[in-house]
Image (cartoon, rainbow, N blue to C red; front, side, top):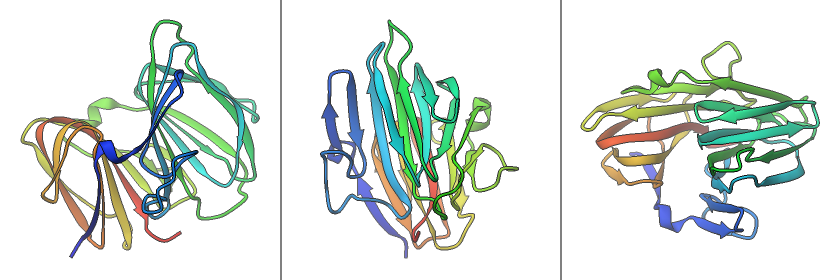
Length: 238
């Protein structure tokens, strides 16, 4: 029997810094909830809105796989490995922080906000050589399907990380339903509904609701109305 944990959008941590409006699915910064520290190897899922022209100053990371998915607007990136780039809606970026990196991120546009998910996943080995990767996704693959955007395999679709995780983005029409099977036994699924309304194994998720499901080999997702969502297959032990 599948085990589930349900995270309504309004139960997330929230911090409004003016320039940054952030919602935290898991304990982060000054928000701590002992029941919401992580989901397996998934440590952070932040839903951030960055005001025009604002951003995060240079700061360090280590031993974490950091995935950024812009949902609206652009995010300019600069890091200690010499990478300078702008990621846009439709792109996905990953940094393996490994033995240590420093980076900054900011909204380069003076007239529009930037919305993004930033996700941290514990790696399966420590102190790897830091690396950076950014790709533009083929959004057409998301239509009524699970479009893979991340895996452990550099040769596979999407970006890759140092962990046995697989991420998918989907854009379902109303009343469309599809099943997804685990790639690796003993992993679990964490699903964040970006917009619309979906049903996951009988649980209804509205905009920004999330659900974690484990001890099951597959899930079924049905869109009650046109919906976009993120599915993460995550190791439950790390």
